[in-house]
Image (cartoon, rainbow, N blue to C red; front, side, top):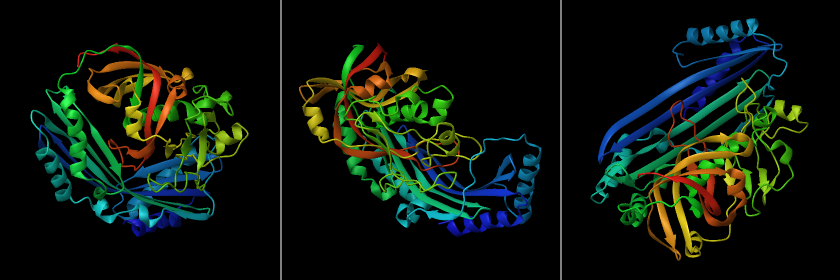
Length: 452
């Protein structure tokens, strides 16, 4: 754990800052990714990094400087001076987010696992090797095993102290034949010990017998069973397009005038649950406010948007601790949890006379944010269900849907749920994710077919 080192660096910044107000964020990352393709391990990468972000203010003038080139006290002093110089020549901004005030908030030690933080490469490669050896012919194994530690310390000149230390682990296993026929199993957890390789192999092998001879697709409106990866993709777009109060103020989201109104099925209840130990806890936001359970949608009725101090003031309400950065007002829910239902996954499957079971979506994108419409394709497992059982696979299809329609037509929610973490990152490693069940939805619109 890098906790003490991060605190020491942050305190050093505060001691030398000459600004009227200072916020320092020190982030520590230890992450690893093992990638395998064509049944061979071919990539093993490791990142160990510490970076400092210094945000300073002189009245309504503010600036932020960030660097990971912090090998000496002189490097850190240079970073602080750079932030101060930029702030003094910056234009005044009458709408600055609030600097975190006195208080102390930290994650529980239970959210951090040192063995996962170290991410021993031999252990990860052994897991990959077992997946490769367990892959039946004619399939080849593709996938990644990734994760590590996400630590951050936030200190302010106003007396706030915050620490977040979370570990995350992910496995993506995709047995593929001829580059087109395959099935993806993805699991997320806090530690690499959360994963049972044999269960992952069994989960895949239960479906592989169907994927080699997919039936021709039939575009149109279908009853669909959306597994957690697919549900998490749709929730991400709802969160991004619709639930941020900033999107409402910018005229992008259609949800501003729908607070207190029914917008989805009564079976749909959504929370922001930042302290849930099954997810990746975040006890405070960028303004130092303590996070807690927020009901976003209750039995289909929209209850709350994501607010920081600026959007709350503009819309005449209170912040619910959703500030993501002090540099700009971009509030967002970071720990969504869709409430589980009362039917088992097997019951939902058994009760389906004819449906399509969707493993995940890909290349999803916005069509029109004002009606929450998106488009994308199915991928890595689209299965036909008849009379309560999987009878075969189907070639992939493109969908065009409004999230209003999708979440209004939910007819079943599984009582099982699982965390779906962000297993692919192209910048700093950040442990985030949602907790989601399986949904059964009627009238899901597939607009066209594909060739694979």
